[in-house]
Image (tube, rainbow, N blue to C red; front, side, top):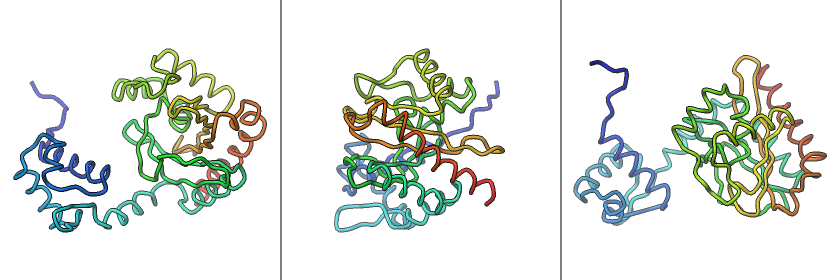
Length: 254
């Protein structure tokens, strides 16, 4: 009986996993990759040799690392999202105004991807970096975007990626998440209340387009003692809204 499920290529899956390992570890040798994948060293060597020949990895002695070709790919991808320079400038300005860490992210395949990041003078160090994918249910960026999506789309994302507990505060039940998304719509911004990282709170706000709908979100992250409800509601929400509006207006007329 025919199905609409496309045929998947196992070799491509293995190649993608090798690239992920190299990204996670900066560099790795054939034995290390083979052990991480539970795959034969000869097969790993074949994949790496092909990637090297195509210019996607570089061999340095017995170690391999991702090539600079990914920078070109990344720039091409980022160029599809809103007005890249406007996003970067608003993220930088918001970080200066708040003193905290500011991110802009977009949804792809049910995950939120960081596309821009800037740190203010008082910012705490986080492991976030441009290009990193994060869960949507536990981040302010993700919840801000989810609040703009149809109920069925949110259900599909939850089913696909599940709701993993990242801290004791993480929302892990669908009904509780939908209640949180309703609250987000009512007040106009989302909150990550130490749900992704202990001791860190974030405010997030969707960035939308009249024709395309939600295409990203802005967030401000900081230590819980600084990210009080009063500061979020009476100061940060207005700052984030202004930055989001600048991006939206420039996207409409670009």
